[in-house]
Length: 303
Image (cartoon, rainbow, N blue to C red; front, side, top):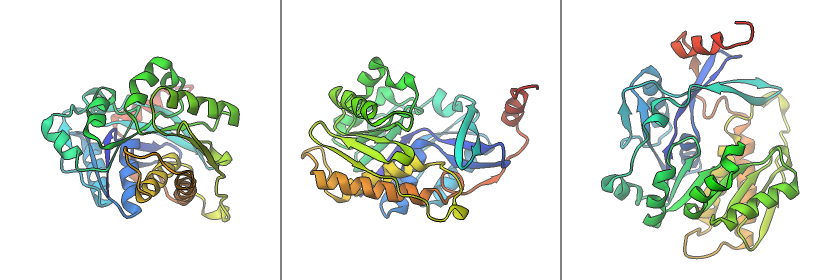
């Protein structure tokens, strides 16, 4: 089985640690799928700067193919974060750089390549919305991360995504159980075949229009080994999707409740293990005094 990440890549710069890590929703999912034993690849645009080279080499070092990626002139995406009591806090970003400004358009050659994968994953940060109908027409399973921002919960945006998605992920740690289920019902009603909500310490919930399943979060038993929550949502999705694939997931047949319940438990286990990893998947290096660092520091209060 093969998983492809299509879309965003970014450098996550932790301003409290002075360390930067490779990441991005569309990068993390295939990296985690590879760690779970599947073949995996990433397809997207790298900047032609040092950060772009850092990203490409770090992803390839995880055993994830990057051969079909494109390098464009321009800066790479950088996000700025810090950790508060173990929880990663997003401080801002540079807009995603050339990866978002000039995303890939899937031509016939790339579509033939994409069709060799069982699952293609993308996200709201990828600029890939226009390509989703092409992916859905291939017959390949499509998953999409809808994040947590209100902009990506607007009916007009959901109507662009849901009809072409076999699985959507929504971050719902700020919602109670009733509101979460209402949101899952809405996205399935708009065309998504399966909706997954991660709710932080409250666990996760999935709904496919017929059945609802839920799981509790796995508690960290050794707080001394806990690093942060970076990548936990992507890890949950990867564990969930890989479990579904191994359970026979396809466009042709509805999933059994037991298969979804097992996938939720596997997702929770994958997210739990991610709590002990620095950054999205390690490969950290000291952050340099680059232009984007100066941009961030000049925007701090009092500067």
